[in-house]
Length: 73
Image 1 (cartoon, rainbow, N blue to C red):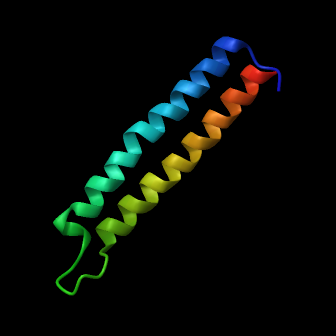
Image 2: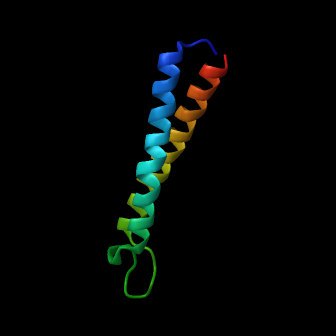
Image 3: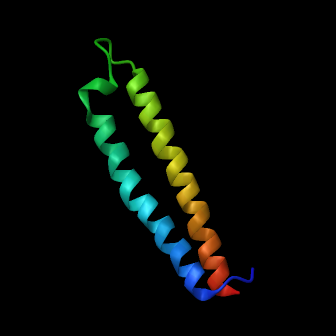
């Protein structure tokens, strides 16, 4: 992959940022009382937050990989 080093670093930082922000968010959401109903089943709140966080983390990993491959040449 042929991208400038500065752009590769931006992609790496964006990927790391996504993981640093969304992973703790997912942990907080799992402990939130709104995440489970009276019976202990997961709620829509948890499902939506899980989907949002997991999608962002997957895209963050992809961005990180693209940045690392861009630096590697």
